[in-house]
Length: 298
Image (cartoon, rainbow, N blue to C red; front, side, top):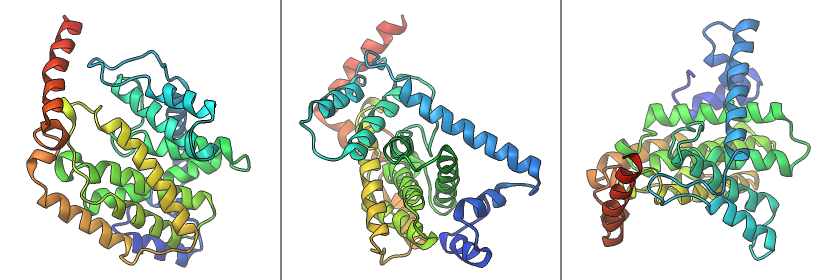
């Protein structure tokens, strides 16, 4: 995907009068032929199917090897069904889906890294319930939304990072949330400019988020941070659709994220040496968790 900035992508949409997903699809093709286009669409449809399956094939009884993760997706869905939770159908379905898909990753099930395995629950949680809660939406719309999300993800990766080891969780969860926010804005009929604002707002909200996995596992706090990622994406898309803009352009927000990541101590960049991983409870979990995992393997 050939754009190095959101501004250039938006300008291309204005010049061609094509939707963002179409512009990025054409940029992604080595040759703009019917065969190449069909192959690209087939691949994206496949990724969409894998995303849906990671949610629909969730098993509530399954636990990760460490025992830290599993069952929360079902627990949340049950609480939602009981009527004790706040929020509408889409909001709660998104939270439940984020938990389920993230738990699937921790339990070694098949997922789509979007853009990473640790943040794999955000985009499915934004899109799968959307298709269910907004019946005028089609499967084709979802595929188009994935192209758009991928375009924003690629720019973030090129200008900054999507790696927790390089720039902290702001790079992983922040990127996923920004991608999802832009995709939702597109689905709601937002302009390319609005999609850029949604991306900027979502990423701004998660600037400085550290990567501090307890015991070095993509489980705690990663699974629950996927919930924050999708809730932030929905809120940011709503702000953009309301005409609220980011005072700092998307490209500058992305650049700022990269700079913040470069200043982050190594202890909070996926090393499990700082943050929650370094708390007394986090260290105790690491000790007991590794012992339990070794027993399981042996």
